[in-house]
Image (tube, rainbow, N blue to C red; front, top):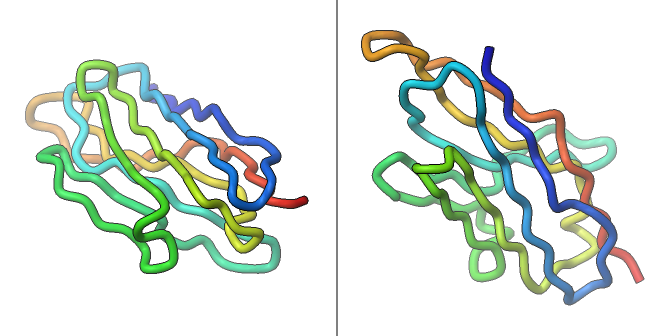
Length: 121
């Protein structure tokens, strides 16, 4: 089994910073895309940022210039540095990773349980 464990969420004032991390563990041969999604109260889940195994990155327009995604392939970990946080960034943040358990296996999408982020004064 594969698990994604997130950490780093919490309460922060507007303009503040937080860093989220997500570590994958279990039966892992390789990891393709890793990313962060978020779901605000009463809204659907949306993509925040994604990074491929080769390092290509895409961000949602709403976080460009404020958030930075990175990954450590040796540790099977993805990070999201969030700066200049706004109340509109309040949401539960979910880690996602496409993981293959074998050299010839298919990639399966796994999700973390979610890390709440609240931006409020």
